[in-house]
Length: 85
Image (tube, rainbow, N blue to C red; front, side, top):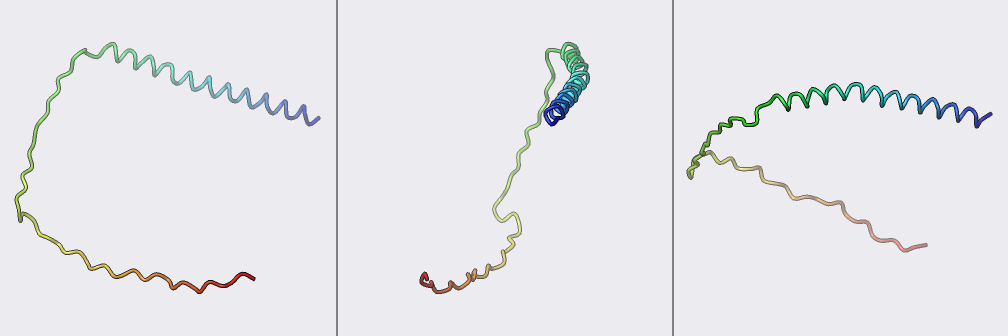
């Protein structure tokens, strides 16, 4: 009885898995066809424009903000080592 239940469960899960795969293919294949068509329709060359900008920084150009002084880190005191019983 238990083996039959497990077999029915596995067959059901296999059918659900196949359904998911079929649905994914039905969604993906038209999108792939659209991408292929867009690739065929696009021109072989594209115009590219770019601008070169230069940033010039001079000495003493900005305000220097001092950082807060850091306090020393206090570690917890170690307890004396006790002998094993």
